[in-house]
Image (cartoon, rainbow, N blue to C red; front, side, top):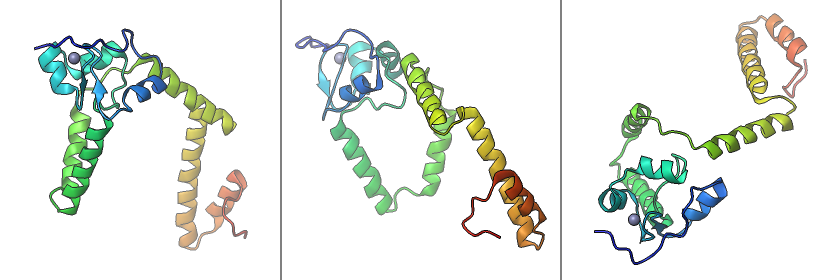
Length: 177
Ligand SMILES: [Zn+2]
């Protein structure tokens, strides 16, 4: 079954998002086990190498969200989904079922360098805003909750909670009282 006519272009796992992006940027995609170029890897991995996509991802450090397909196939999938939606074949309840199926599916193990890159990005975003990410998130959440409560009372004729909100959080609204 296996045709060893070509050699894979690399022999070690990916080290960064850029490397993976370059790998999946072609019209078709290379099988790193044997060097063949294909539209879509899943059936080939199963039949030619007897491994699953998850095993392939783990071996080459490809994050779970990256499609094992070339850009041509991905574009045609997108087009199919758009056509199906236009024709009314798929409806919102299908999306819900798909989301449920996604949540029920077993989690793929995370790729170590991907975790590090994501963590680094979160830290940098926090630095840019002057707060560590978790504090930023907690503070925004508390502020939204306080504002929503104050707004509720204001609409019902009680301005006191909104005044307290402004004392604590400042006045984000354009209109000053
Ligand atoms: Zn192969």
